[in-house]
Length: 314
Image (cartoon, rainbow, N blue to C red; front, side, top):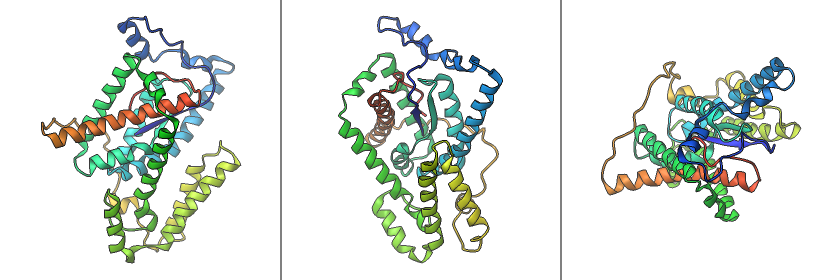
């Protein structure tokens, strides 16, 4: 559940290997984490460069942690799974990503795919689908088929992005209204739950939700270098825990319990059930995950931002 955003500088890692390079040489090129991405550290004051990079990384992490938790919950997962996914994938992306200017973080575009899968299966099936999606992307990268994505019309990418935004907005309606009940995945089921729990709707939760949105929007207008989401979340959380502590607002702890401290729990991929229904759902989820990552590469291409044919699909 990671997205990559790439800044506009034209310098990336060392020049991509030409098509005539053999398969083993190309694989060696892609799996090598020691390349030109570290060259900027040696320019000027090394200690100051490291400090600035560390500070920037710390700010990104502080913003990404609550974001990863929110996206995980919206996808039907637990908050700690979002934290671990963001941390591990961010580290792998930094070492083996397509450009030193890419920033890895939680992406909302996978929410509909993951939520649909989690509504029907368990976490191990999601792990299996993600591994298959990663294999698809790796094969596309090795075969240098990423250029095919550039043939997709711009209107399709824009329409897909708008549809994802609408789906995500609807997935958060229960939290905005302050409902204590767990929200289902599908739209009409959400409406039924909302109508059945209208007595739980909290005006205070609605105000906090709108305040978070407006603070994020207008703080970013002041400066893009200010971590607006972090400030917005911090300010509204402070209000919820102090001034409105007695208003019965739903919290993550109330819905999911305390976040565990044992993160070293590995979920093995599910075994394949050879039924048409399971195979259809698995293939659909894996292809959708791979397609979304390919769509991100297409958007980078349309912005003329350099990127490699594939990056880790986390």
